[in-house]
Image 1 (cartoon, rainbow, N blue to C red):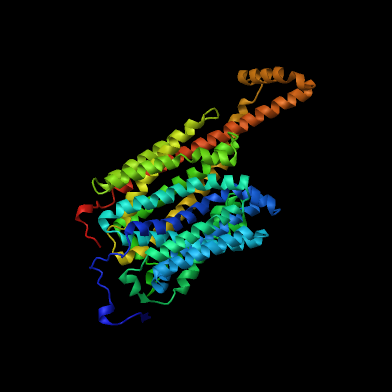
Image 2: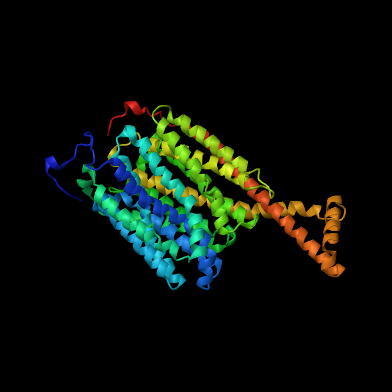
Length: 529
């Protein structure tokens, strides 16, 4: 272990407030642009998977490895951000990551086959993994504690709007040009972000004079193993029938053993890759738990709603993306309110109110049927965007409010990892529930398909009369049965979606008591650390 500069006057005084030379708002815009690009990329490719599969002559199942490969490399690098920042400097590391992300995007756009595309997205994920925690740490360090609420409001606006814009933009680019443009569009955005970060961002003293330590190789390997196995299980478990597949059982076992070994190693290592002890901080540990649950709701809703609109309502990819885009309106309103009221009232009131509003939006979505109009979807989704903004801003601020500035980099890595894992777990649970409960409801509805049921007889008679001119009686009878069976499957799928949305609403309400665990943060008494 070697110190960068051992001279006494080179050691920074963490009690002395550090003020960046550039305007903090310019720094905020610079780091938010790169984060916006990376977050949008996690959702933009969803709508293009069928097009990617078709152009590369692969199955849709194989195409899903496009997303899985990106998420695995993204999550692994995300947790090592604090070490890389200490070693190379946070600004330099952020610039390197933006460059890697842009290079991976270019390679993905030019990929001639699925193997090259997966390799390019692994590279892209390596670059993108550090963008969020680095940007968040830089943002929190650049603003005094009293103004962190407004800074996070600006940051959260980009993080929340990006997944909303992603599917709409991805659908338009795919339909109008090619799926490759979803990756090419990152090149000019990344170039601008690189120039802005280079111009305005600087490292604080505790980063410039940080103690260099060797990379925790054991911790990094253990982390890579359990995160990769967990992500593969979450992405492929439903397709492989979960524990019905031997390889899934092996993956789960390796993930569990790898996770336990990782925790044990990190708690005893002299220079751990991630300092897990920061989770003992009451505000940070509780906020991380709430964030994980909130991410489950946010990512699951973003996945389920377009699926409902496309499979049951007949919307195109672009139309479904456009239908959920009003979430951005709610997000903007939530950001404006949070930015104005942060510090003027108890943050816990914000968060409890937000969780209740998020539960209400999920309950409204749990009341949909096959005859709903566009407003029946846009109304709840606006409430959803409003609630998420109003929750994420105080939650992110409170999470680090009682930590030292030099702990923030490590903390944001853990915070973002838990958010991403929460989203992956939420999507996995809800898609599994969607498939399984749809089968359950189909079995529940089948007993009603009998000539003894007056409603069934009436439907058959009405359809036979309407289709009588289309051919012989036997042909008409088969058509009628096919139409009614299709209707039964639609109703079963509808109830599966309803139960999913209601489950997400209940999850939000369960998290409300966790808010009471948090210590109140009095912004007017906080020092400008």
